[in-house]
Length: 162
Ligand SMILES: [Zn+2]
Image: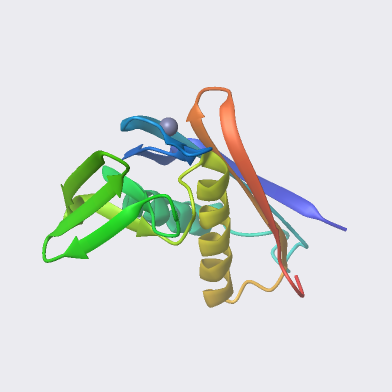
């Protein structure tokens, strides 16, 4: 038997700049006010909850803070030529060249900063954090990353031995 908790919006949001690459092309630099939606399924603990909402808000809020007011750099994107040295990060795509302060860049271990991949990044990091807190009753973590109202990418991570 599975129960589910959901958390959305409230303070689970971040504003960030990015561009995605697609089919050999590259979007212009732009930004979004992202909203994060989280669904966690699992069995009930002895306290008759899946997880403490406050704990989940703290975990997801901290992840949003990591991305807030940053440029989202997909480190595994083979279409981008990235060089970080000193305090600067240089990103090249064809004739285009961006140089940003490294402090303004968050390096993500993903291949493209699509909402789907960002949702996957969140789901993995949430699972890690829950594991570190000893949550053994979680069966799956689903995250939606909404770039604009009504436009979201989703990812579900099924937890082993959940
Ligand atoms: Zn975008």
